[in-house]
Length: 226
Image (cartoon, rainbow, N blue to C red):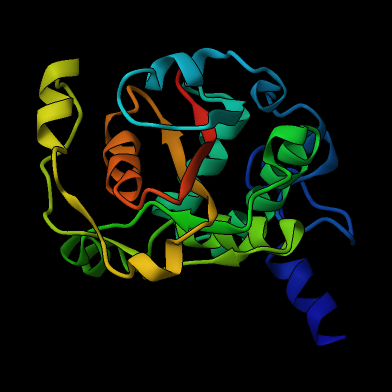
């Protein structure tokens, strides 16, 4: 009864369109969920994300689940996740991301997930890594472990915004370090991030993991600016 009274005063609304949610909806209404801009990159051997990372690191395959454009549904949802602290939304988006990966046989060997780490100074400032709830949602659907402490960001690099491709590459060079090499031995690792633009940061993290010769790296992001 109390829950129903609270819902009348503070209605549970979709975090994309702000329309009231149905009883069984979590954070995204069925209409918005069905109209999220899917890329289907996980099903394509060559796709724009793969091409974006060519020559930057040794990666088995790369994909993004959705297109990111200013004002579209996924941009609104990611804003809620990154800046409004909607961690449960991150888990739901991770589950949707997993659904896209399951449509491809390329990712059926994945046995570990690594969310792109934040530097401790930014983690203190923001309060949490937005990739962690995404990883949790992925983990629950793919039934694989999340390795939160296998890789760390050694330095707090400056913002990548307004930097050219070369400047972005230099800005993230050698900023990641593998903390527990034995944990990564022989693993098929899914390295994830929320959004990919030039790919410089996630490629830098992949290069750090590449130093573990027996580890294979796959990349997937929630969204891509393509």
